[in-house]
Length: 186
Ligand SMILES: [Cu+2]
View (cartoon, rainbow, N blue to C red):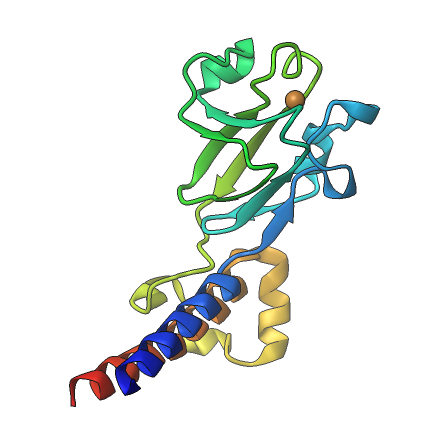
């Protein structure tokens, strides 16, 4: 029973990790994933900055649409025949696990050509930075620890404060998990 509680606690902790790592973006915002209303997904993308471990959510009526992750060539030609991955629940949360471009389109004939496609460029700064990340952290003499310096740094290198914060979150969660594992063992 106690073991069960531990497992539950672990799951909850892992859930916290999941919600605290990375931002969640609903594709198309309130419009969702659609061919109605000429949603400009390029414009939607241009307002965002995607980092590794962010999540994009496609919401749509699964009777009329789906989501295919495809290669660049297939994206450009709207080819739906060799997707890398297929999603069709109507509410698909897709984690962006790797940096670089990710290409998504609707596989229903004609929809991609009508603009139901989105290219998401994921930048390297991970919000789930491992605890060994501080190589990138600025030298102590730059005073990056103080919040004012952080605010200044934001202008020049936006990802730094973000990954710093996430790294410490990840670290404390990691400690929590280790404590849990330790109590499981003893
Ligand atoms: Cu569609």
